[in-house]
Image: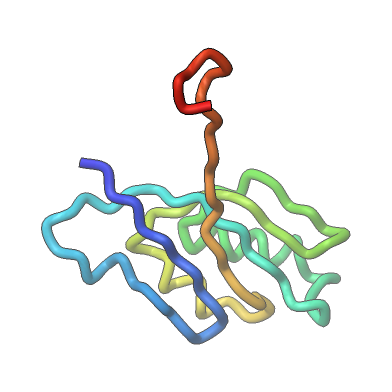
Length: 104
């Protein structure tokens, strides 16, 4: 069963917590983590802390303070404990219909 959950997390504020949904399988969600400007010099340490919290870090954009990757939806709450994180946002995917599709 595929469950799409829109998640927007802001430091200390969880608008939706997928762990409360019973009877569903938790899955990996793609996320982007914004690092507070004051913590940009420590972005590599924050990236390591994210990995220790269960995040699969795929990309660290040091110049703009963004860390991209995936994490089990049940572990999203653990990211709130990491100092220097400004916010965590789910990545949205989009796929166009094929050019010969009737939906064009």
